[in-house]
Length: 133
Image (tube, rainbow, N blue to C red; front, top):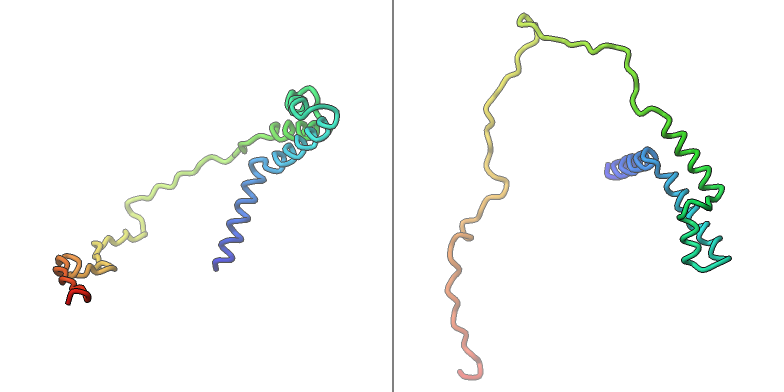
């Protein structure tokens, strides 16, 4: 039972990751790391980072990611529904029985409080030292 719960949780997390565009974000991260690596071969690390994030020098992977994001944005988020909403109203002559409402009866508490907890602790017994006796 617990394994099935874990598998279902992992599947839901994976579905959410894919739904919010996680694979493209991971690819973009890979592209940036490769760009910094490639640009740092010809200059310093700060120049490589600047070239990577200035938008002037996109790599082929960055271009493909941008076209994929643009195509995803064109897909409409909402769906068109042609059917009209139907409203069902229960009439007073309905054959359905009314729900039975019974008062809630609570049982004894699960953890019974022990009466010793409300009694003061016993007076400490004086301790005699074995050396002085």
